[in-house]
Length: 179
Image 1 (cartoon, helix red, strand yellow):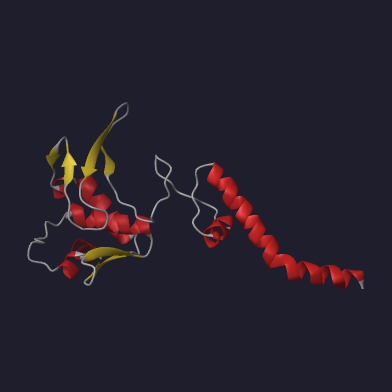
Image 2 (cartoon, rainbow, N blue to C red):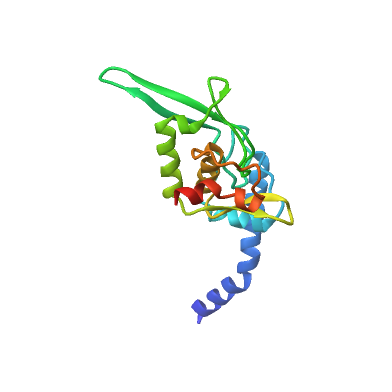
């Protein structure tokens, strides 16, 4: 009989206990400069296994982009030469340039970059979509794979003339050629 009374008391008071625990956790997080605006956010954080933050410790927004890439340009017995390329443009917009040594670079002139483009396109299930109402490009599927999809579009190794393409067709023009 005592067992049933204890179980009934626990079940009856459980919401109050959980709310109190979440409130105490929120207070602790506030002392460490983590701002929690609602208890449901703190509850979600309780089951989080990975938190990504940038260098100033703000949480990310699940958007990724490739800003730099490296390829081996020469490799012999004792020396390896690595070329570094900068990638310009916004996160999901398939417009941007590849910069090598401070100048715009045509990626079709490098067999290593062509191979990188093929790998990034073929080993990828994501897509890029143009939202007509918001007038922005949006990711479809995982952020890291979409970042590689956008990279393929920016590299444009087949020198596709994108100036006359609508944003919907521009979103996946190079990826479609590779697939």
